[in-house]
Length: 192
Image (cartoon, rainbow, N blue to C red; front, side, top):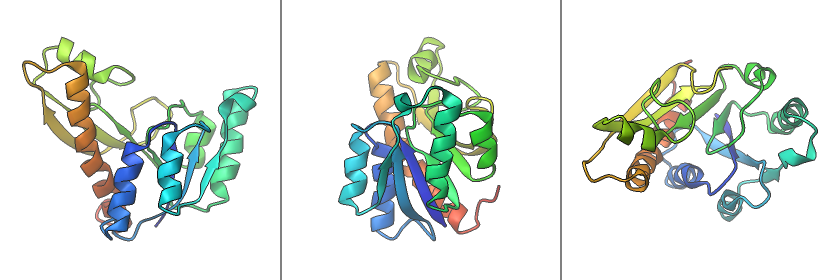
């Protein structure tokens, strides 16, 4: 299973995937490319250090979201991937893009969906008095954070948690969840 990862920032989830791949734990999956909309994304350096080809496509070079997504599709299609992994890609994707990669496009979200779609998930969970937070890997659909859930992981919320402390623990959980899902997809344990 050939995988292309899309990033916008630090790439800590990408690094978790690279680490699993380096240790031979990613099943039949192989990261063949990393694409970012941000030329300064530190995650690009992570990929380069792992000898994974990188591409950058700055979204501000395009007049609108549709034109950017079309250029992005052309770039991704050049890799001929089996799976596209959103790993901190901070762009809302057009329906055309999502449909082009139907059943090949996954995302990780820092909440137990369907709770807390969108941003500020940790703050919202704490403010709601929740005792459990977590992360969700899901198929990407046209509606934000609403695709079919593949797998979730729970993380406790402690009484003294701040938004930042909870965010850190959830991110650590993501680093185990995302690679395990990609491994299981590549081995046919999970199907779409």
